[in-house]
Length: 87
Image (cartoon, rainbow, N blue to C red; front, side):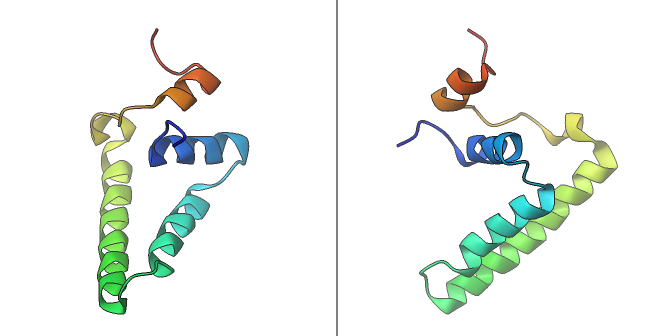
């Protein structure tokens, strides 16, 4: 709908609204905690999120940004608004 990804939206949140890493994590976790899904599935998704975000942070601390792997594709909105993409 907006020609962007969730990664793009987080970029905008940190760029325009100065959201911190802790705020990004809280928003992400809250989207699962308050999802309109069955409680058992909600619990599993929150547990999976907690496990994966902790592993991500550990890899980042141990290896730095360069070793995280390729970045996700950026969509048109962020490319146009912030001139981030190669022409």
